Length: 139
Ligand SMILES: [Zn+2]
Ligand SMILES: [Zn+2]
Image (tube, rainbow, N blue to C red):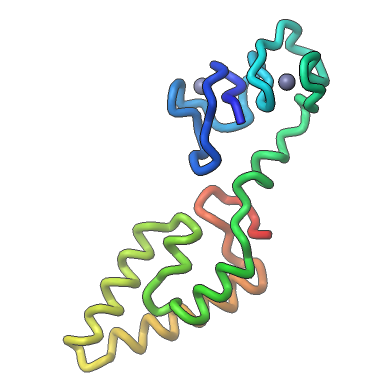
C-alpha cells in the first residue's frame, strides 16, 4: 500500500512509512491503494480506483499474522521462542532462545523453564490473549 501522508510505496512488512515515518493508513493526502493524490480531503472514495478512504481496517488485515501458525510454532518450537520472532517480539524471542540454549549448560533446567513458558504462551495465543507486536489480533 501507499503512504497516505507522502504517497511513498510501503512494503507489507513495515508498519510505518520509511520515507516520512507516518503510521500506515494515517494521513489524507494520497490514496493507499493506487497512490494518487487526493485533492479533496473529505472524499470518501478514491476517484481513480474507488478504494474506500475512510476504511482503515485494511491495515490490520494486511499485517495480520496467522494464529494457526503461531500456535503450532509455540507448540513445537515454543521453548526456543520461535513464535515470538514470528509475532515480531524479537527481544523476548532472543531471551527465550538464549535460555533454551543455556539448557545445555544448566543440566536442562532453563530448557524446562522455556518449554513450559512456550507451552503457556501456546495456550495464551490459542485463547487470543497474545497479539502481534503491532497490537493486531491474530487471524
Ligand atoms: Zn510517508
Ligand atoms: Zn486510489
